Image (cartoon, rainbow, N blue to C red; front, side, top):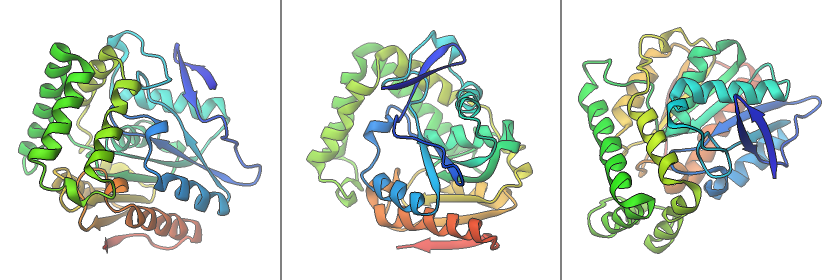
Length: 297
């Protein structure tokens, strides 16, 4: 297992990672209550395709997730997550990289781009938001997301991670209108969701949920991002109007709508997720203008 000590904690990263001597790096941050080991199968194809372009993918477990240490809850915050990623890049001597992630990983990436813009060659924000109730037009959706994190936190405090997994799996079978559209069967989704019991301690889950609902609103800062940026989101995702806003206010941005996908597009329409990222990276590498709206599916 590959571990490096960053900002007072032991952080895990995939031990197969190597910085190419003549290539580049894509630093990927995973979603909430997940881990690198739980990534959608399509990520293997993404890693292989980027390797052909001399771009290595740096995968790691975020503070409090799976194999990365879970310190005191007071150390969890979105700026701290971004600082941890900077420490990891510094450890490898990476001065500029593609920075990206899905859901919570996208929030980390947006925070990183605002705090450490000099490190960002290009930015990928998938199924995520850079806001938190700062935009009146989307404040209610943001409040709904904060309320959801509060509810999840309360369940875990009372019933543990196992308790929330049981409730989420039951909801999926009884009330989720999009679950049958996933590339995984309902049973496979249940099994993958149960990995949270392995990936998260109760304390780590609660601390991460608090960090997410109290994250800084970045909507006054994201217009200052100059790096080429891909904002993509599934059309059925509750984050979609927030992603649309971010796509409008980040100046050098491509906004991608992924059809027939709810939250976590890599698991709904994996090939469209793959195409959206690779099309963007190819255009960045070729120096083409990436701006505009595109649709996949």
